[in-house]
Length: 119
Length: 111
Image 1 (spheres, each protein chain N blue to C red):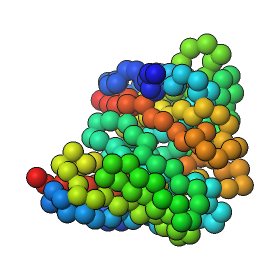
Image 2: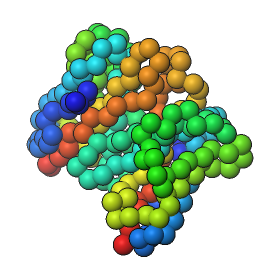
Image 3: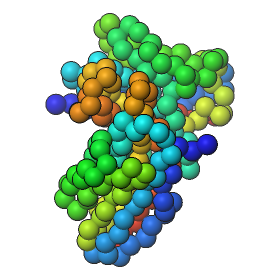
Image 4: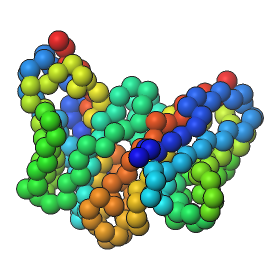
């Protein structure tokens, strides 16, 4: 049973370019979450998506960042016109069901991350 | 204001020297508390989920416990391969399902 997959694992962009990060959730999981992690800082929530729906984007910067989880294919986190401050590790996590029930459905499973470097 | 505080920030142990990591939370209405392990350059690996005060869970040399204000991750007779950063996260009852993470405890176990 494959875990959460993210690609690319490393991404280098120059200032002003676009970065696209992809996430395929675990089999059977329909909920995807994106986080950003900076050195010496904790994981910061960015956005929560279900298929074709953004459920919570309260942690996402208002400009340049967008996310989608189409009916077919992986979830994509898009960063337009990247700046050096966008350099970080971006993690995707997935869970099986809507977080309305206790039990294993609450647990998020993380991918290996994409390390974005902006030159 | 931090809702989740982990201590210590860093911990160095000798192999076989048992110890505990702490995760305290100030939220009201805890729904769940999660422990993860993160190795350098990798994503967090799920360890435990705790829901109720008094609950305990074990996995190999690790044991997680939960009270109304904090959780402990006990490491018994650690080995060098237990070296990692251990992350704690909480979710709130009443509909807030997005976990808030602490900054982690960096554990190094020397052989």
